[in-house]
Image (cartoon, rainbow, N blue to C red; front, side, top):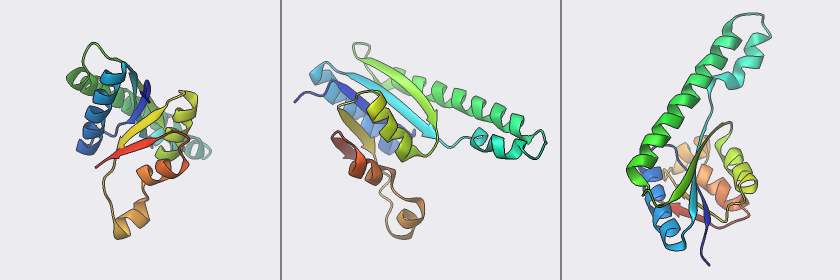
Amino acid sequence: MPYRNILVPVDLSETSARALRQAIELARHAKGKLTLLNVGILPHVYSDELALGGGVAGPLFTQAGEQAAKEQRHRLERLARQEIPESLEYRILVREGYPPQEILEQIADGEHDLVVMGTHGRTGLKRALLGSVAERVLRESPVPVLVVP
């Protein structure tokens, strides 16, 4: 089955770059398109709570969050220009929140038929403390997930 609408969560690590390269090959063969998704927990996630105290921290965090999202989009655009051939259709999305949840929501919203993502390969205590984005997406995704080490 050719996958024509591939979601690639990208955190700008080497493992996500390898996943992107794999997704490019799959999309190239299927004449498909890619969606690069970056999810971060940005400072303005907490701006409402901080603003309740009446201080100026809320707007400052909102401004910092917007700037961080702009910078992430710029980095993703640069990565896309370097890696994705001009003949391949792609789009870039920057979202904020809890990465596994945002990825799962994008799968549904974007009608993707495959997810290709990297893993950091955390084990033991680091995995218990930090969790595994790839593991949660694998467990809950309604579409196939290819995890690239």
